Image (tube, rainbow, N blue to C red; front, side, top):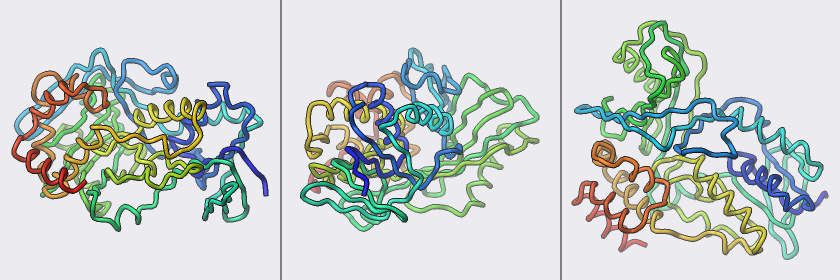
Length: 381
């Protein structure tokens, strides 16, 4: 059985970010690292976006930047100037190639295309079993989400951010290539939180994504039918579908960190690294992986890594509301994005606001709804 200092069970966004930063820090060249994943990471299986002025680590693989954003509901459309930020898009295949090309240069790091079946922590190390091999390690980074653990509990609300997207090429030049549509709630809500997400890369090319924050998935035909209706509404008559993507991101404040031990750290969605109230993953994972690199150089026991913040509580409030009244999403997000100072909202969503700034954001929200949620959540935790 081969032994490693570190094993990453699951080689998704958070694991690859962490290993890449380990390499770039030049502090782990004496450590052996194994990455295990059943996916070979050779295809474009998702698209990540984030707002930021500049990110020196990932700027090389950003495929598109937008200066403007659009928020819409049935009554109004609001154009948001993102300056000094830009909205950045990264295709997953570009990220995988960028990170793996760097990783493969280092003899102390191994990537194995294998599925992890189980693992066991002993007094001395951790033993992992894949379909065909066994490995041991000193410390394990685990990013394989167990949905049943979250689904089979009632204390913390669970919604899914689920979507299907089409990359299209249109015969008509209908898109503003400098403007990304964050949320267009003008689509029929049908008792849920439903919106269109549009990322144009040219005047006649865009990703159109039908997205829901709700409990249940739809049939594929319903997502695609809504995309067809929306394309007609914005004037796209003749087009071809170049590529499709789909996904489902768990939105929950479930305390994944309680599964951490001194040797095992849950990371990624399995560690609560996804922003619970929005489903945004890339920027959160970027921050958390940087924190983890610093942690590994100074501390050892993984139980010390996670710290609960006020933003966890704010996310829990929103999820509690949408869990009980899923149709209120449009009302809540409209209260945030159709009033002045959108930069404060982005700062809040990035978890970088002071308490005084938090109050300014919270004051924009429908007050009776959030007051009732506050007392429900406060009594529960």
